[in-house]
Length: 230
Image (cartoon, rainbow, N blue to C red; front, side, top):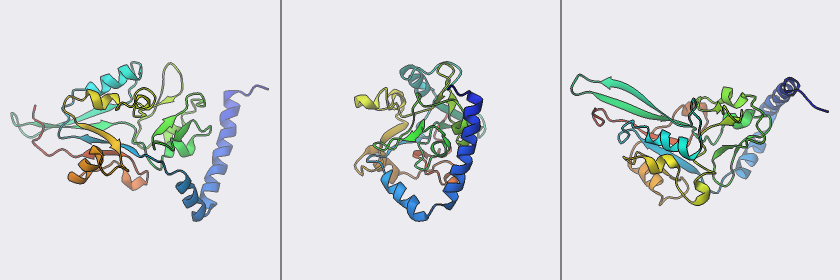
């Protein structure tokens, strides 16, 4: 028997209500057990050095080409703020906006079909488009507003660190390779010898909205005024 999308979403609403109650009443021991089972062997993360970024958008173009991202949507954005200071000594600040690959991802928690999931082998927050019904619950739940509905597949999409297009081939994400100033560093948080870990130890960094408890894995090295001059 076929079920309409409206009927499906109606049933999902009831399911989520039950899931929310379950999440409130379950024991801390159960939560810790589940967390231990979900611990990935690798924790891929990225650092965006705002001092090195010049806002050229090469990362956006590379991502679009490699991952076949259509016009009108984007997996990666570079936000520019400023100018700061007086002409001619003016400076701008550039910040990367993309999936944070949260260890406690709200999008995964609310997905009714399991289409949004955390890859146990890499820690990457991914999307199984075959299971996605386009309900947009993940989009509403994401506090970073980095998910969107793909205009062609009508399923949720976002940055996945080029998991299928490049990581599977042993290559770095397209944005990292394309950056002309090496403002992006990608690596494994569990490897103390990785360039990413060494960079995080050498320079102060921050993450967005950590107060929400999402444990994001996109780190930012904050702009020092006067570093980027245009």
